[in-house]
Image (cartoon, rainbow, N blue to C red; front, side, top):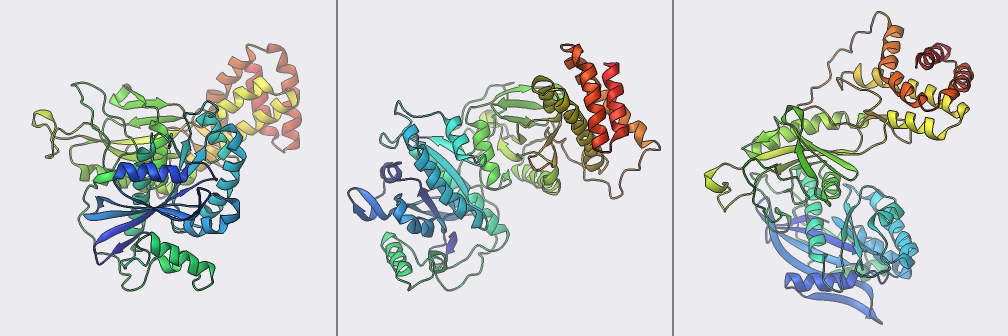
Length: 518
């Protein structure tokens, strides 16, 4: 949907509010319109329920020097109007999915989200989703973790609101605008952002277009929504820091020697990778502000529930463009190695607050920017090993230990020997549900591209494998067997049978030896 209107030189983006009936979409738009000083246009209502959509138009903020015009649309929630929902969702640059937080509404939330998920799979480039957990003021509201688990999508940013009271609605909108601009930047970079007069400029024209689609006079809203005329992408301009809804959050004072400001979702467009999913990750990682502390080598680290953050000592910049260049270089490495890494993002965030429009700090000091790596907590092979001892019988334990050892040795060949990572071990390796290995820890900065020629194999590969397993697996076995030494005979026999069944006799012998050493 996003485009540049050549007549006004405005960037036009569409924020679509979706969700089940009675979740609070129209109430959210009314509260938003009131806070933005705008008016709401409702296209058809029956018994207080939206039949077509609600519309709010808002002009504010800038992107690459262009004013931003937000077309804010709330879809009908009734199941019988699902095709109208789809028409509007297909034009979104970002979707705010309004969730009814009451337990009794959980099934309706899931039914509505299934439609949105289907539209998301077809979108190119993909759009982000903000889950607006509404009605948080009600006593029957369920917890955010339970809501997130029910929706079953870890890529969601989640906010809390009480639309009736107007609480949290504007903050949700601000986050949605930032995510929409991340998508726009992808279009901008790929030279696919249209420069064309919008065919849909207000609520009345959207209503007329939807009726035309339903009557067969137009194929889709997407085909007519972009209008006609010159589709050339606007000329590149110097990257200007956006302001308005997507600009930074309220600045907090900082004292000498204090930790840097942690990143948050207010980071300007273009300073987070990957552009859309990365902002969602930053939002989720910093919903509960992480407590930062300096660790060895002078790095800053923080933890927030299921996320870890680190800013290397060297990743500090006085010049934002220098920091952006470092972000781009690090992002290139991460992009190339993405299949080998657990979920994560990179973000360049201002570490110190400004004291005025000049951008200088108090006392005339220069601003400081920090590059952060944000990594989602993931289960490791070491965790798998401990769980086997705690939960599995002897047969399953034998099978499991053989599997863990095979995965660890495979990682040595696929990750370390391939030149991507300097050091991997049982505590830094995870396995996806599909069986793919991934590195779960922080990547060193700056990351070094892999060597063009593969690492030379050792003269005695088997000896190297034994050294790896003795160094990493033996301590785990020793610790676990200290609590249950009577299991050794049964596990030895199970290992022998598992190794024979899988044709891994040599590896089974090594593991049996480690068990006896433990």
